[in-house]
Length: 365
Image 1 (tube, rainbow, N blue to C red):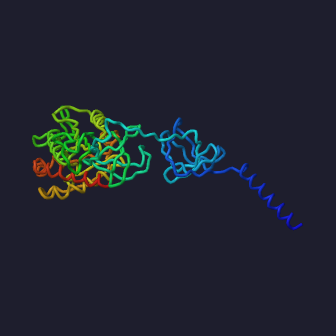
Image 2: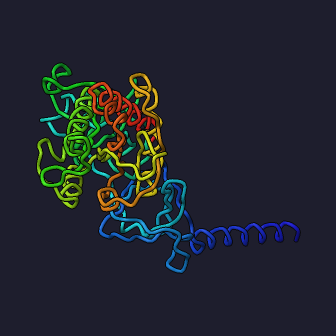
Image 3: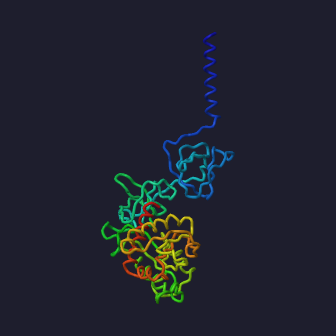
């Protein structure tokens, strides 16, 4: 009798196990994590569970790269950054890489100031490292979207965009003759000489502001180019240029920053020295960096003081989608100050300070 009870219990336990296998939902862990991307939709819901009944925690755009860690029926458990959830598997596809015989094996030389290396060929993929202007890498493979696979460090590979470099058959002479390698290489700046043509600006002691602005802007252009930057001038001659046109030039250039050069007129006798102005909130820190960097070079050649950096609502900054500043080199209606600021040594000192400020700012931001 005791034997029959044990036999019966074992039989019932087996039945329960079979029932569980067939009727309880299961989550099949992948043998290894797989990287996939979102396809055929630009708004894929990431949910807390494997059903449309579960809460949406994030919406994924087309081509977003996800890491699939498991599958549950027609749903995939995925990780996006630090977020884990479930998406419908039918909107995921493999990331297909294809090689290009015309580029694999050649060298890719970076022309951007900085460029991120990522785990896969997507801007949403995990960042592995940062490469800089002048770095050169052998192209190991090319993804379908054009990105290059490179070895960014010994034994470490990743992907970088194919839009920010020069392709060559060897490392030597990849860059055009005359390319300057400096702390601002890969950066682009728009330098705006205020006023011009029919717009004289301030006029004191036989000197027009428009002329001083152009001299200062050209000196700044030379310094920035010396440090490796590409410089777009709003004007290089004495011509009339509207505020709207200056902004349009900046929009077309898509610069790292916009710098407008002016000379000032005081309303109070206590006002003296150079100052820097910003309009957008995002420009405050940028302007501070440039203003602070002026002190050492300027004080080495003159006693023109630093006034301040402050907010002012300026069209060329307000309507400009790129960060910028407007620099007032000094006051023209104070004869003693005009004599100091209207010198090549002063203009060069200001240019050196501005360039140093840009270098310091872009090291951090």
